[in-house]
Every structure is written in C-alpha cells, then in structure tokens.
Length: 435
Ligand SMILES: Cc1ncc(COP(=O)(O)O)c(C=O)c1O
Picture 1 (cartoon, protein in one colour):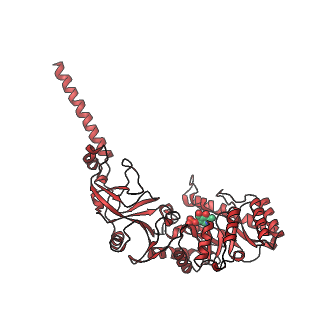
Picture 2 (tube, rainbow, N blue to C red):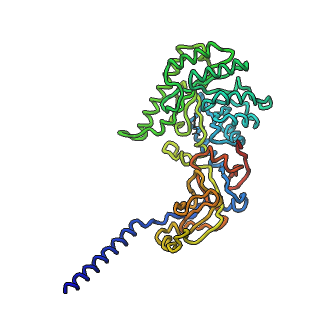
Picture 3 (cartoon, rainbow, N blue to C red):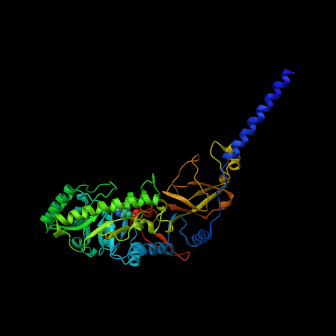
C-alpha cells in the first residue's frame, strides 16, 4: 500500500514538473517577429536585383532626403543660416545637392584631408568652419598643400576653431611664420563639456591677442555645440520640459559669452560674424535666438537610427545598406549542436531560416524584411554574416537584406559609390570621400 502511494506521489511530482516546464517554455517561447518587405522595400529589392551591383551598397533615396530638407527649410529662415556638416555626409555630389536645395554656402569640416577634397571638388568657395580644433600640424599641413586651383582662399573662407589661449598662441606663431591672416572662431562650452573655453578671463585673453594682431588673426565668431540638450534627463518633469529648460540654460550661457566679448572688445564684434550652435538633435528648438545665427546640421538629412528621437520624429530614414542574401538554409544548424537544430527552429520561429549575407558586422540595425536577427551562438562575421528570420521573412538567394546605419559618418565611406534612388529607381551613382 505504502509503495503504491509513494509511486503515485512520484508520478504526480513528475507530471507537475513537466507541466511547469511546458508552462515556462510557453512563456519564454519567442513569438514570430518576421514580416515580408513592405511595398517600399519590395520595390527597392526588385530594382536592386535587376540593376544593383551584386555586393553590399549604400542606397540614398533622394525623395526621402528632399522631404527631410523641406522640414529643415521650414525651421531655418534668415537671419538664421544653415551650415552643412561635411563629416556626416561625405560625398561632394551630395554636398552640392543639399547646398543648392538649402541655398547655403556654409560647411562645417572635421578632418584636415576633407578640406583638400572639398577644394579639389570645386567646393572651395564655401565658408568652412572647423567643428573641432585642429592640431597645429594639421593647419600647417593644410597651408603647405594648398593649391591655387582649389579656389580656396583661407583668409576669407576658413574659420579655424580655437578652444584655448594656448592653441591660439600656436596659431599666431604659424600665421606670423607664414605671413597669413587666419580667421579664428572661438569654441565656447555651453554645457556639453567637450572642451572649449569655460571662463570669461580666457575669452578676454583670446580676444586681446586677436585684437593686438590684426595682420595675422581675425575674429570670426563663436561655436558652442549644444548636443547635450537633446539628452536632458526628465527626472521630475516631462522630457519636453527638461529639454526646454536645458535649451534655455545653454542659450543663456551662449549669450553671456557674447555679451562679455562684445562689451570688452566692441571693435571685434562687427557685422558678418558667425555665431554657430545646433546640430541635427536640436535644430528644431531654434526660433530667434540672437546672436546665434548659424546652425550646423548633417545626419538628420538621412536619419540613421541614432537620430530616432522624439524631436526628429517627422524626419524619415533615407539611407540604407542593401546587401544580397548569398545562401538560404532551412532551420538553424550550429556546428557541434546539429542534434538540436530542429528543436531550435521549433522553439523559436525566428530561427526557421538561416541566411548568409554578403558582408556584415556594420554599425547598423536590420530594417527589412522585419524581424531579422543575428545569431550570437554562431558568431560574428564581416565576410558572410549569419542572419536568422522566420518563414514570414521569405527571402531567397539574391534578395536584399536592408539595414539602417546607426550613424552616417563612418559608414558612408565604407561602400564605394552611393546608389542614388528617385521614384524607386536607381538613377545615379555618387562617389564618396575616399580618405
Ligand atoms: C560641432 C558640431 N556641430 C554640429 C554637429 C551636428 O552634426 P549632425 O547634424 O550630423 O549630428 C556636430 C556633430 O558631431 C558637431 O560636432
């Protein structure tokens, strides 16, 4: 009798454990995230299968880009000026296209060699403000390699960004040595704390040095980058209130530098100076924030995923990596775990297919078809990356996997010519900066 009860209890215990396991599995079992291409990507896929280069490439959709530009135009109106951030869109044809749509001749440059490329591409007649301070050797290298056919007159066109009295002295020494006039824009810290001057006595020393050396140095304005404003933490307030308050604090600090400088050195604060701020993350906050008269913008024109923010909700992604599927394999089979391959795709529908794509490992997120994912168990490859997707993703060899870059600046230099799309068709190929 006793044995009967204990067997019975054991059975109930096993059954209980089995039910518990089934319940847990049911709870943690992933749902099917897959979906086929939407109409837009189905069209792009067809076009690229017919006319694409058969390797990973960057697709730039001009219709989408135009829509983003139109939104910027709505906000940036004179006396506020638009300045294009070259590092975020490093292609001479693209820069020319945006500048002519925006009616702008202002660029922000972050890399010495880019200045040369701009000169060689016939863009040397634009006003170029450096977005970061250049080591003195970079400035020297620029002057040493400057060629007359670049049509780039640095004493009129280049604003060197200077972040400290010490660096200004280095620039003065170079200007004297070479008999140059250098335009000096002073970097001020308005809350980002990425450098730039923080005190009025530093500003005073720098303005004095500029005023005392009019043959070699010309004051051209301030640059106070405000990217921190967009990530203001909402602790006891709404996100909007937190951003508004950070924006006001940034603006007040900017105005303090301006008021101090103008009072101490009115002779330097004439017309035509450049008081720069802003960026993709914050440009939509600006209305009439005098003296700020210049906003530098780049990334939000193509909207990589780092720019999926509330403030930029109306911008649309315009830049995609498109890469062909090389192989489609049913299920997911991992070396040494072959026995579990059926189980894996039964448990997780997103493992119903394995696609090996051309390339991989980019700073990017899967965009279309929906629900694609990498496979950490299999590993990472920049040559033929593994991608998993459910049957609903329905890709075959030669179909495209589309990804959105997380940011544009490095990615745009990695794929060769941009494939320019208009009305869903590839209409051109635009080279990107090579260096
Ligand atoms: C000084 C400065 N201004 C503006 C920007 C804005 O560039 P983007 O619009 O591409 O974010 C940046 C970005 O790094 C920057 O460093």
